[in-house]
Length: 204
Image (cartoon, rainbow, N blue to C red; front, side):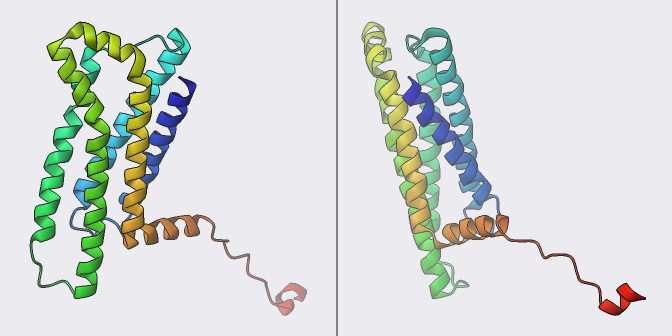
C-alpha cells in the first residue's frame, strides 16, 4: 500500500505540473487548449481522490480497506468524457485551416496526435474499472472477492499509464517542450545586481 501511495502522489504532482504548463500563455494559443486544460483538471481531481484514499487505507486499515462499488461507478465517468474529447480532437485535426502555414500545421498535427495518444492511454488505464464495474453488475460477490486482491494493482496501473500518457504528449509536442524549458529556465534566471554609482558621486 505504501507503493500505491507513492505512485498516486507522483501522479498528482505530474498532473499539477502538467496543468501549470498548459495554463501558460504560450500553450493557451493552441486551438485545443481548453480541452487540454479540462483533461488536466480531471487528472488533478483524480489524483487528489487517489492520494486521499491511499492515505486513509494506509493509516486506518493498513491495506485492508477495499473499493466500494460506488468508487467504480465514479471511475468510469472520465472514460466517456475522454472518448468524447478524443472524437472531437480527431475531427478538429482533420478539418482544414488554410490560414496556417505548412510548418505550423505540422507542429499542430504532432501536438494533437500526442494529445490523442495521451487520451488513449487514459482510456486504456481506466479499462480495469469498466471490467470491475461490469462484474459488479453481474455478480456482486465475485466483485468483492476480486477487488480484495487486485485493487491496489489497479490503482498503480492507472496512475502509471496516465503518467506515461503525459510523457508521450511531451515527446510529441515541441511547443509543450519549449514551454517547459522556458518556465524552468526563467525560474533559474539570476536577477541583475545593483547598479554601481560613479566614483565622482561617491567622493562628492
